[in-house]
Image 1 (cartoon, rainbow over the protein chains, first blue to last red):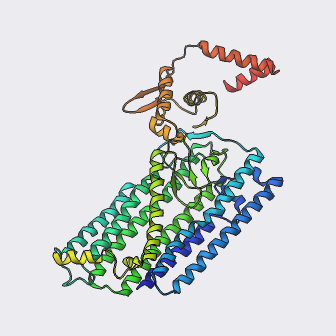
Image 2: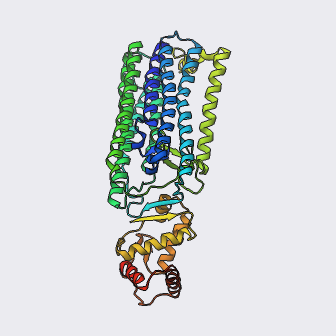
Length: 383
Length: 119
C-alpha cells in the first residue's frame, strides 16, 4: 500500500520542482518584471552591466537546474525503492530539498542588488497610490467561496452521522469505522484554510502601473479575479470530490478506489494551480505595454528576494517575488508570529521525522495503520 | 488620480498627500463631489499610519477643500470658497520660489510662462 504514497509524492514533488525552476529562473530574465526578486531596470541591459547581469543569471540558473535535476532523479529512485522507514524520511527530506533552489535565487538577488548600487540606481522611498481605485478593486465573489465550504460541512456532518450509525445507507460500511469522518474533516479543514487565503489575496495592495486610473483598475481587477477564480475552483473541486468520494467509500473501499481517488484529487489540484499560473502570466504580459510609471523600488526590503521586512509599511500581506502567491511583512507584529510559528513547525517536522526514523517509530506513520487507528477502533467498539 | 509619496522628503507625508490632493482639485483630476478613499483604505494602500491620513483629511477639511460626514466619508467640496487673495503663508512660499529662480538665472518671462502653464 505504501507505493501509493510513493506515487503521490512523486506526482507532487516533480512538477513542483519544475514549476519552481521555471518561475524563479526563466530563460529570458531581461524580459521579466523581476530578476531574482530585484525589479528589472533598463540600465541592467546597457553596456557592461548587461554582460554582468547575463553572467549572474546564467550561473544561478545553472545551479538551480542542477538542484532541480537532482530532486527529479531522486524522486524517480525513491519511487521504485521498497517502502521502509528511511524511504519515508528520504521523501520528506526531498520535499524540503525543493527549497534548495532558494539558495541560487538568494545569491542572484544579492549580486543584482550590489550591481544596482554600483550603477547608482536608487528610487528608494517612493510610493504610489491611486486615489480612484483605493479599496474599490476586488475580484472575489464571497458566496461562491462560502457555498462549497457549506457543501463540505454538510458532507462532514453526513459522514459523522453515517459513521455513528444514525444514518444507514448501506447495511455495513465498506471502510473502517471513523474513516469517513476523518476523511471528510480533512477536506473540510483544507476548504476552511482556503477562505482566509482568498480574502487575503483579494485585499492585497493595488499595484499602480500607470498614470491612467482605468488601466490600474483593470490590471488589479484581472489579477485579483485570477486569484479568486483559482481559489473558488479549488474549493468547489474539494467539496464535490469529498461528496462523491464519501458516498463511494461507503459502498466500495479497496486499493483501486484509494489510488484512483488520490490521483484524481492530486490531478484536479495541480490542474487548478497550472491554469491559475498561466492566466496570471497572461495578465502580466497583457499589461506590460501599459506600464508607464517608474515603479516602486522596495528591493532592499526584500531579504534575499524572498522575505519582506519593511518596518515603514503597515501592510501585513504582500505579493511574493519568488514563486506564486502572497507572503507576510515580517516587520508587522502578526507577520513575526506567523514566521516564527512556520519556522518552528518546519523544524519540528524535520526533527520529529528524523527521530522517528532513527528510533524505529516511523511505523506509527504507516498508511495501513495510522497512529489514530487504534483510538478510533476503541471508540468505535465503545459506541 | 495618482499620488506619489516620497518617504525621504523633508516635507511630511501628511503634507505631501494634502498638496497633491489640492493640485488634483485645481487641475480638475478630482472633481467636485468626488468620493475620496476612506482613511483606513488610503493608509493601507500607501502603507502608512491611519493617523497620518486622518491628519491630512482634517487639514483639507479645515481649509475648505473637502467635506466629511459619517455616512458618505470624505468628498471633494462642490463649491470651494474663492477668497480671491493668496494666504500669507503661500505669499512667503511664492517669494522664496521667485528668489530662488532669480538666483538661478531664470528670467521673469520664463517664470511667468511657467505660472501660465500651471495656472
